[in-house]
Length: 282
Image (cartoon, rainbow, N blue to C red):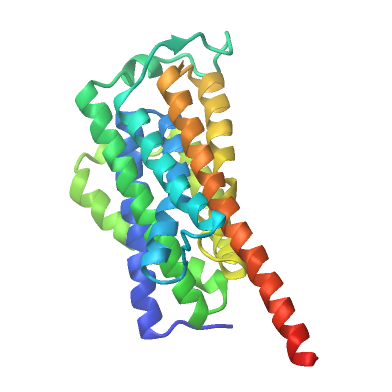
C-alpha cells in the first residue's frame, strides 16, 4: 500500500483546503446560495480553463500561438471570461418552466431571488471556487507523481477536510439546534454528498488525473449543467433566463475549444514521436 511522505501530507492538507473546505464547503456553497444551482453548475465549466491557466503557469501545459491548437486554447479562455461576465451581469427575460409539477412544493424560488449585489457577490465566490479547484487539480497531479495511489490521496484529503470543516463549522454556527439531524432532505443531501460526491467522485477524479492529466479530467463538466438544469426545474422550478443560457453556451464552447486544442497537440506529438522512432530505427 502506498504511503504519503511529510511533503505529500502537506500538499494533501492544502488540497483539502482548496478542494473541499474552502472550494466546496465555503465558496461554492455561498455562491449557490446567492445565485442558483444552475448558475453553480454553469460556473463549474470554468474549471478546465482555470486549470489550464494554472497548469500553464506551472509549465505542465504549453501554448504555441503559431498553431491552431494554441489559438483554440487562448480563444477558449477568452470565451470563458465572456461567459462568466454574461452570467454575472446579465439575466435577461425568464422562460416558462419545463415542468408543471415540482417534487418539493416550497418557496425555494422566492427565497433565492437575489439582489444585484448578492448576485455579483455569488458569481465572484463561484469564480474563486473555480480558481481553487483548478489549483486543486494541479496539486493532485504533483502528489500523484510521488504517491501513485489515488485511493490513498483520496483518503488523506477527505480525512483532513473533515477535521478542517469541523473547526470552521463550530466557529461559524453556534446554534446547537442547527446541528440536529432529522429524516428530511437535508439528511439525504448529507448522505449523498458523504457517500457518492466526496469519496467516490474524488477517487475517480484522481484516477482520471493520474491517467490523462489535470486538464483532461474536466472534459465531462458540461453534463453537470445539463443535469442540474433539469433537476432544478423538476425539483424546485428555479427558472431559466436568457442570460444563464447564453453564458452557459459560452462556457461550454470555451471548454471544448480548450479540449480540442489539447487533443490536437497530443495528436501532433504522437505523430512526431512516431516519425522520430521510425527515423531512429532506419
